[in-house]
Image (tube, rainbow, N blue to C red):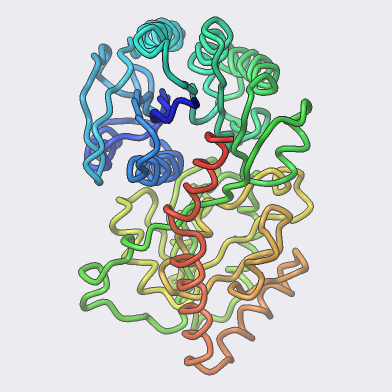
Length: 409
């Protein structure tokens, strides 16, 4: 008779409590992206609500190494996510190289102990991202104890470091070694979650089971308290995200210069191009540069803006292997979104976003003006349709069901 006990899942995660994350960021000289934390936390929220899994979670949040963060020794910290899920951090020494070594040792110890405790049960070992020390542990232990391994891949290694300043010297050499070994190891898992079909074609050379989860919506993100007393500011356009040259910041600057002075443009983020936006804000009074701010402020501003914008170059190879992380959040706000038509955005999104097909500053500027020439009710309706689409078809419960099906395959 088939054993009907719950599947045991050991999940190596990048999630942590968001308040703790904000505190860590405030104490760090180098600011990290919140996107992995949000994506992974929503996956865990969905999995923890399911009744068919016993979930054990150990986390390795992205914390800058000393001296970019002053704390050197991190123990096995207990943490609680917003839904009440209890997790623990892998202990590590927060110094370059030692950080990776201690993450490998601690994850290896955790995985061996968990595997021995659950040796008579159905087990699967899952890891979020292809972080080399933990990925190596996952593959070693899954082979040693004859269980399946699953990797959730949200980045292609060669595109993970778009800020070219950090690619110089010894650090750059270390990153290249990391990229090379990560590319080799990521092909060896038994199951995968990818953002796009193109990622599967590139990585999943052995044609193993996989699913696509391009993004995850949280219906609670823009709840009523956040919306209270917030109204739209007319003809205000907002961009929030990476300010690295590699993701099209020169084009964004050219478009801002093209627009008439009756538009206001808000810029949020950090990157190797941010100094140019600081200068542009000093030059043009309608450009407001905010830099790195809290996520709560970003969400409020998204509700206040009239149009949200995300303009990657469709010709860039990277856009085949990525789904813009801000897209789901932008659409969830109910504020209309203008985007270039990227290969990584599935066709089912096409009815809910204002798209521009030509990556040309004049064409994009004209598209912006044509959007604002529409009746305000039409623009608002587009935003509400997008919000409803995310809340009903891309919420964390629906998207996590895909992962659950993959685990149970």
